[in-house]
Image (cartoon, rainbow, N blue to C red):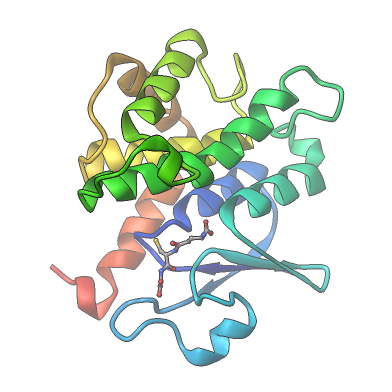
Length: 207
Ligand SMILES: N[C@@H](CCC(=O)N[C@@H](CS)C(=O)NCC(=O)O)C(=O)O
């Protein structure tokens, strides 16, 4: 069975959501990344001891974008991955990777107060990233156009968490409308509840 390495309140959330959207059977493996970090043996699965990771058919897949593309194509019958030749595939691939390669590091740089010019780092400037995401979501209901795809579990998770929870992403009408569309999805609602309950059950996060 597919194994999903997960920790609540983490970047594993989008993959958790995607697995529920796909409706596949999977075994959740809890990884304790807090305190001293994940146990050393977890490095055999994820070399930096980060979540998420998955194991499927004897292969380990790490990195959110790779996991997303792998799952979308492997479980293509769910219809969440535009196929090769589908015009929506370009935006689908772009936004799945953009989330990890540009949006996430540009936000981290902003939070850390990093002072730099675009050419210093491959992810470029925070303002350019915000303008790009805002332009795209003003013109499209979803990452790949007019339909929900696996890319939205990644871009959507990032926007939901950083705009509504950590509040580091500015509230923009296009972001809010996107979040409202995504939060109506039963799989999102299920996973948000489960992830929260799992986080609250952790000794370090009890309130
Ligand atoms: N590049 C990884 C990053 C994942 C990541 O940053 N995970 C964090 C949780 S939000 C983590 O596991 N941190 C634990 C640690 O660094 O020890 C991916 O996109 O899958």
